[in-house]
Length: 310
Image 1 (cartoon, one colour):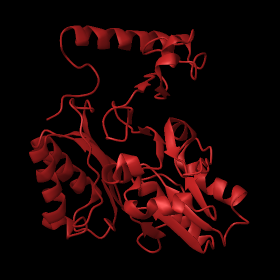
Image 2 (cartoon, rainbow, N blue to C red):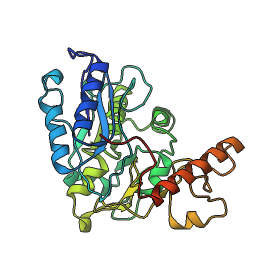
Image 3 (cartoon, rainbow, N blue to C red):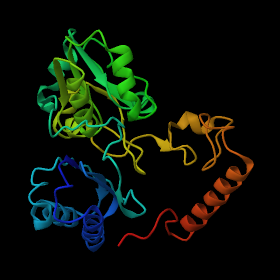
Image 4 (cartoon, rainbow, N blue to C red):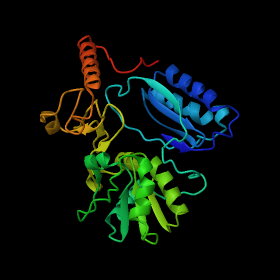
């Protein structure tokens, strides 16, 4: 869930909002992370149905928020086990990090495209479809047109690299119709706001992101290929929004397929072919000890990672 909103104008400080949100999460036994900043709120959480609904009611009706989150963007998916080991509320400078001063989707934002209308843009050869996510996310899955053309991959390492991609690669395309997408929609909101400020004329983005698309568009009509990376222990979800085939390297947090775990540089909890050789001996020893504690906890039927969820 996320919502760009002016929290600086709230009667409560960000610290007070942080305490209030954390209490609502823990009281409802919800795991995950919420991020708050003066520009709004963002997070991914997990809990039972009644708990999630109670928390959403809190966000939408608590007087301290003054109706700022009445129409908060929410996507739902299901899993059998709690994918988060702890409950956290963080105060940050931005709810999605772009590091460009003054960009605000509350002032200017691109045209929202409903998931049901997205295929038309993906299939249009005159539309430049851009995956605003990072390179490793693109590798896991992306949109592909009916003729087999994949979305453009900016090959970014982090979202704060995206403005440089726009300036270096799209400077001559300000009159081109552009359609962008990301996991849940939040990165696109900020990206379209930035692009409009840079003079782009026709900027569109998938409302609710990939997760909303997978939630509402039938698989037989889908232009999505692969899985969608998510930033929790599920690693990636398939078109049914169920945990997919990927596991996670707990050293570098990159997604792995089964073949990657057979690579000579793979050591569970310690390294994979991407990060092998990048850790010091001290770090390797620490990672091995951590994996040992994870395995011991699992043998006792316990969870080692993170703090207990309230």
